[in-house]
Structures are given as structure tokens and as C-alpha cells.
Image (cartoon, rainbow, N blue to C red; front, side, top):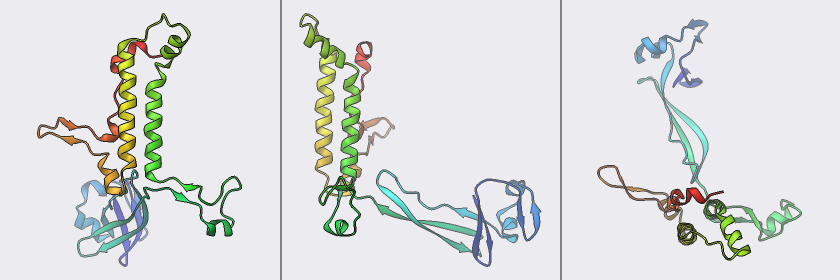
Length: 214
């Protein structure tokens, strides 16, 4: 990316090479390929250094600012990052006084879900999806006791429930954002192979019961 700068202020950001007009002079897109950074700088086209984007799993992006370096011909972007809350935000008495609470809710109800709730619900949903494809075998067994549930399915379903409970407990035990972030970290060996799968990604796969899925 580049930025058009005038009087040390960013006038326009350019995401990809294209024809531009600077001081009433049209320049072809090819200048971004063939001109040096110094040559671009002479017409006020500076190198753009993008800021760190928020990790939307844990952060939101806020105000954006630009630092112009006229000597180097660069514009450096800074994005204000804000941690997302891990706990739910509840409606307060002040919210009630201000008339901000919906008619079907009250003080103490959840106004905005925190990350712990969001990821708890995500694991619950993933676990439910993993189990649903073989629910028909459980129903069949309840209606006809002569129909056995394959051991591979029984083992898989028990594994899903056990691992899901373990992950949900790990989430519940997080009292800081850093502890929650740690649940998303996969450890690797020196050769690049996986040493330890991230807790949040550790639900079992269903490769061994593919033939029983419906």
C-alpha cells in the first residue's frame, strides 16, 4: 500500500497499483512498479506501513492514526486495540433508569455476552453437531433393543462428551484474558509437527465413525 501525502498529512490511501492524479498530473499505475521509493516520494507518494490488526477472537479495533515521516517517505499506521471482556456484561439499575433495557429483560440479565460465554456456546454447539450424526443409532436402540450400537460409535460419543466437559471446565476456570488465549495455543515440535493440540481444537474428529453418520 501507499499513501498520498501533502503538507505532512495523509490525503489518500492507495491499496493497489492504479492510475493516480497528483497536483493535476495523471500518473499511470506503472509508477508503482518501476519508480523507486525515492522517486515516488518526490510527488508525495509515500510507502504505507500498516498497523497491527486486531485479533478478532480477543480484541476489537479502535481509533486509527498515521505517523508521517517526510524524511523517509513513509506513513506508519497505528490501530488502537481494545481487549474484549471475558465476562458477561449485565444490565444495571442505571440502564433501567435510562430506559436502555429491552422490555423482555431486566436488571441482572445479560446485556452483552463475554468471551467465556461465547466460546462455551461454541464448544457446546460443536459437540452437539458431532453427536447429532449418530443420534439415530441411539433412537433406534431405544425403540428396538435388538439393534446394537456399534462400539466405535459408543466410544466416539463418550469421547466427545468427556472432551467437551474438559474444555468447558477449562474455559470456566479462566479468570483473565491471557488464560483464555492460552486455550487457543497449539504447541509444535522442532520439526514442525504438532506436539499438543490447542485445548479449543481438541474435540475428537469423527473419521472412525464416518460409515455410521446420517
